[in-house]
Length: 102
Image (cartoon, rainbow, N blue to C red; front, side, top):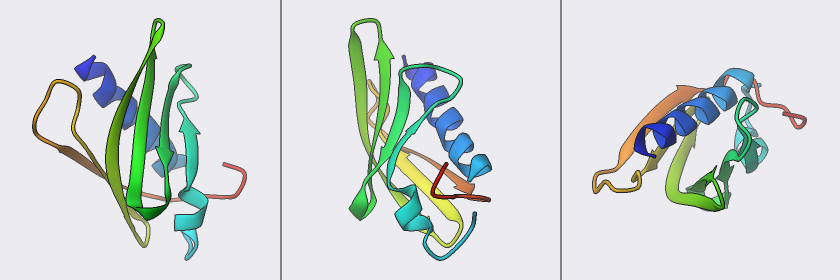
């Protein structure tokens, strides 16, 4: 699960970063659930206040990992503790395009 969760975060995060319109209201556009278009059952939810949840379906179960994010201009940093680990991991990327339809 640990490598798959890291892959989930990477795929979803890069999908947002790469598919994403840099602008002043990126924070409002980022809020919501972003599904991994390549793998069913994988998503990341960005909430107000810098909180997020990463979800991955495994059989009948859904693994949920809480985390935080920081959006500054076009830079998005996510931080979370993977299941079974004690140390938080972070990843940072650049939002290139983010629209109301993405």
